[in-house]
Length: 358
Image (tube, rainbow, N blue to C red):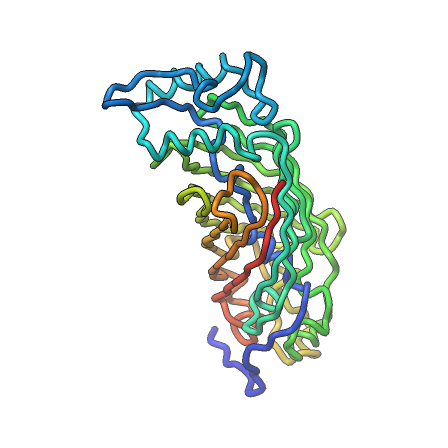
């Protein structure tokens, strides 16, 4: 059914807000270089066009036969990595240098990346008004277990990465807060504000998938993951499933690139809570009634770049990041008057900030 937009449509507005952080956090999965690489990829060396495995411990100048305090790898393990590299073909000089960097990288052991940024997002899911949002993030690794706290959420990978494996399994818990339309005054649309504010949803579930290293180059990673989360706070009371495909690779020593595409499936409880309009809401807002059902509510794509300010991302320190994300609402999320009359099915997120790794 074609619906026309009321005359009091307003242009984009910009203000500080946290009402849409949950959506931004989903896109803003800032990943440190360690999570973008296989930091223990197998080395091999080329000399006068003759490829032979060498003792990598000598190459990175390990002084003795004990495990290196930075990488935690002993010479036997490093030699095994060199032997495995021979099976994959010769390395270029640039790849040899990258192997050295990875072997002594701050990301080879326990590390922590702390970041802070700011960005612009729609004031609610489906809005055509944009607001500023804070973008704090913490990413790290402890004893081989990786974790990420981005926006109002936390995920942990409970499967340790194995240095010599090309394929790694991803599995672990996640918890996040959905702040969509939680604060009425920050919705920035008087008609949608008339529908009232919503409760904070606490979504608990898991993240599962597989990562493949060495797809287009020795140091890139292609991963397939799915997030499954359920509201346990009694807000929407529904389920959200988010499959995604991510591709990550380094660009030189200082810059890392990530691109991802994802889609979101939600059940009827979720969709009706955020996009439905009951009789009382229709009277208060003037919008027609609408009931949301289950389906694929959106499809998204984003590009993330991180850059180390010293020119060497492997030694930690200060860096910057930038994110561009575009998504399109679909099915009932797009058909809802909240989107089709008052907002826009096309959604964008722009963000940037600084990070520090140690």
